[in-house]
Amino acid sequence: MLSLECEANVLISSLALLSGKDYALDAYKAATVELLWHQQILPEEVCGLEQIIPALVKYNHATPLVKQQLLRMCGHAVIKDGEIGNHEAVLLRAIADFIGCSIPPFIKID
Image (cartoon, rainbow, N blue to C red; front, side, top):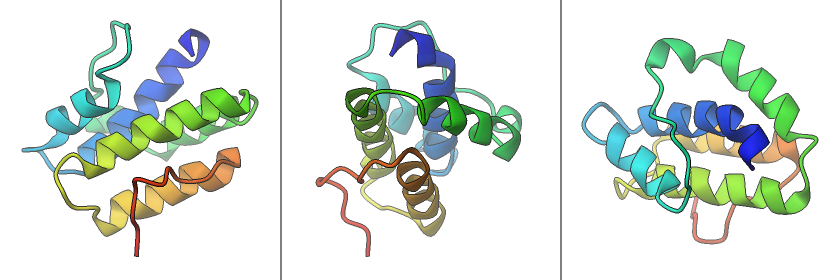
């Protein structure tokens, strides 16, 4: 996971920021609480498609276990505020589809 730390940070930050300004940091912390890294939530201006797509391309080559770990972290980011918004659901599905991994079972998306 360490070699994909920057890419994970882009994806998790992007999802956390979709929770809104009041919840973004809490969502980010919920996703990264188990990690021993020195990353911080990224600002919105570096969480666009220009950063997300290359991060997904790199993750696409990861092992299934690493992909599942990423999706678990992403899942924790989107459920922290108790609601999964449309943009969060779309991005989470896109991440899962791109890397060929299913959304964690604790995530319920209508």
